[in-house]
Length: 77
Image (cartoon, rainbow, N blue to C red; front, side, top):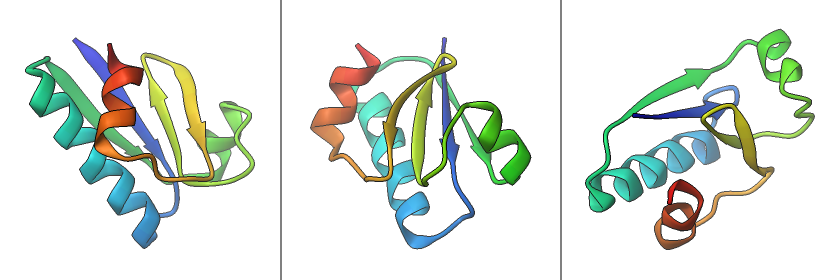
């Protein structure tokens, strides 16, 4: 099971990143959980200084931008 984390305050970009990540995982037919991390202290533990950020299984994949669904599929593979 993939653990997908969205790091951010809950802004519009953060929500779009969460939607794209969920769409990518669903399209791939993989089992996953999505967690939204909004606490600044928790976000900083990942070494992230700009949001939104995408973390897959504990590894930061994207910082400061919202990749499209196809790009996220590659990160989940």
